[in-house]
Structure formats: structure tokens, C-alpha cells
Length: 294
Image (cartoon, rainbow, N blue to C red; front, top):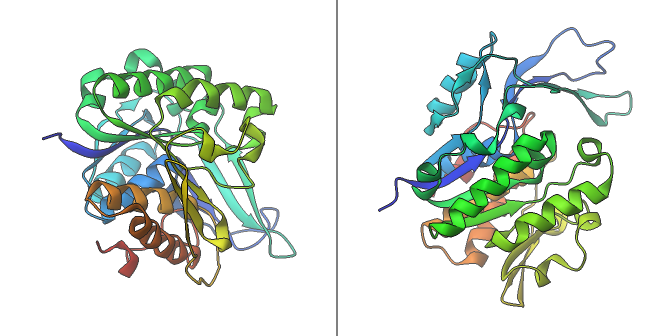
């Protein structure tokens, strides 16, 4: 029996959330967020045994971040405190009520992750690993670490789930993102793109690239593709307050449900409910609720 159901590799940052433009904001709610970590929280709340592979800066936030993740039941033995700063991001609302993000993450401790720091035995202790295009984008070392984790997983019969999570501002040019995606796809068992956001980095429809693909279409729900056969799973109605982290909550819930034996369509329906619950709350991590129960 493997020690973990789901291991994720990535960066988590300190989140400051305001309800007005940053130029006027005087109060912020502090939390944390990062696409892979958000998914691990969702999976852990579904009862999955989870672990995070990262580097955490020893600044004033670092110990609190690790304690919060441990409080969610996430193993942090491979997310040690190291010298450096943690990335920070701000969520604010403009004059028209639209969200905007401001990042301070260059040179963060997590971006110093390197292939040599990925423990092969630890990856082999998982049933599934979750990888992300955002992790690939934050530094060449993190991109190499992502590929190393995928290779170790393939060698040890560990499922590889991958969300391309394309962010143009991180990559600069789409060609680099396409190359990073292409180098990882040969190792991917479960592909979790969002369309149209990720469409620019695929050479062809994503469902033709991997045998198990779930295409997330936001308010239109999702399409589960298994060996070329498509099942549409409608979205759950939601009162949208903040879309931050909704796709991540979807990923974690879906993978946790699959790993406990639920059929993909049923897992996708549960994941739609988890994403809808997240949409009703501000910030990347929603409070625990009904959608978290297996």
C-alpha cells in the first residue's frame, strides 16, 4: 500500500485579499494560495492522503504557511523551510468590480526548486501526482523538477495528472509554454485543461493527446473524455463571488474521488459541486462545507 493518494509539486504564496483597488485599500484578509496546494486542500477534505513538494521561505510567513497546510492534513515533510522569501499576491477589485491580481513572486523560495531536490522514493510512495504548468513557468529549475517528478512517477507506476494552467504573464511567449507542455505530455495519464484558457498551447484538441482527459468549460460544466468517448457533465449553479482557485478545487476533488474508486462522470459531478462552493467565497481556499464531504 502506498503512503499517499495524491502528491503535488508546486508553489504556494501568501494571499492578501481586498475588496477595492489597491490604490485605496486599507484592509486586507490574509490567507494563502497556489494552484497545486489549493487542489491538495480540496483532495484532503475529501479524505485523500496528500503531500506537498515545495520550498518554503523562512520569512515571517513561512512557519505559519506550513502549519496551515498541516492543519488541512497535508504532509509537508518535502516542503521544508529554507532561506528566502515566499511569494505574495494581492487580489483586488477595480472600480467596475472586476478582480485583478498583483504578484510579487520573483526569486521566491519555491522558485528555487530543482530536479535534484525531487525525491524519487517519495514520488514512488504516491498513487498519483499532480503537476502544473504554473510550476513549470516559475523558473527553469522548477520546470526541470516537474519533468523529473513525472519521469519518476512513470518508472514507479504512479499516475500523473497535469493541469497546463496557462498564464501568459508568467511565460511571456506561448512557444515556451507549448514546449513545456509537450515535454511533459508523454508522461501524463490524466490531463485537466481548461478551455479556452489553455487552448493556445495545444497543437491539437487536448482530448486527442491523452487517453483520460477532462476539459473544464467553466459555467458550461466539463467534458470527460475516456479513450475517445465523451461524457458531458453539467455545471452546478453557483453564486459567483470570486473565481480564484475554483479550477484547483475541481482538480483536487476529482482526483480524490477517482482514487477512492468513483467513476469519472460521478467524480466530475462532485468536482463541479466543489468548484461551485468555492465560487461563493473570496480567496483561493474556501471554508470547509458540504461539498468537502466524500
